[in-house]
Image 1 (cartoon, rainbow, N blue to C red):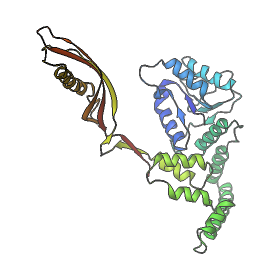
Image 2 (cartoon, helix red, strand yellow):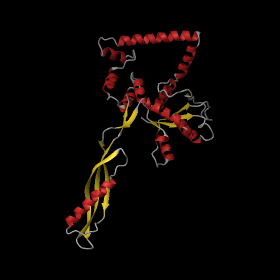
Image 3 (spheres, rainbow, N blue to C red):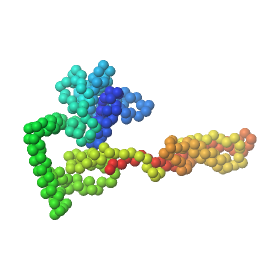
Image 4 (cartoon, one colour):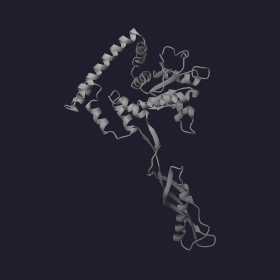
Length: 340
């Protein structure tokens, strides 16, 4: 599946970072320019990400709609031309000229909750664009209207009664599907016909067999069951993801290639001169294989000669240089992500 690109003004980066985490917690693959590798041409990388995106979320804010927001508007125009644009609003602003006909999802009051209805509308719109389908009608405004009515007097009472009835009905379904008779077959049947918020058999087995704490398994579950009973729980666990260094060392060998010049002191035989070159090559390889950071350590090197370059020494005997390949026996403590 193609990725979602987020276009924004640099000054909005802290708020956009929260948005990116929430989209990823809902199982979307998200690209934003903070992921650019150092030293690469950022313009070319952004253009490539824009050309290959299946959906572009453009963030309208005070900065991106102002005089310095030209890059964001250019990216939005490109996405609009491909019909993959999904605009959102973080500030109380109007979309720039040419973008007013597209209704922006209102995230002005969003606090970072990945289960917020407005964020869910954004996720559903992104999924629709990625699948080449029209964006579904937004549900969050109706939820907000319901919440406002609930704070009223008569309206709140009537709405509360209807909501209580709907909640009670859901409870009856769940109790029916979880009675301790004929399980798990009864629950699987309920899930198959959409009762009680239960998973069907395929989703239940996939959920039960996933590796504990695996973030990748949760993302895979959301991808495999995008409307499944465990989707929200999986998203919540992903939102609580932690990343830390492993406490154990793991092999991470890497190759190196080097060359040592002829020795200064001639030796009596070619074999002795070659042995001397091989010894110096091992010392040289240890330098080439030095750990790159505090989370690596060197457990030794293996040197494989490619070609010896031997000639007579100035004071007699033989001197040899050596072109060689080396295997750096590096061990590392990798980053480990855990969800739940």
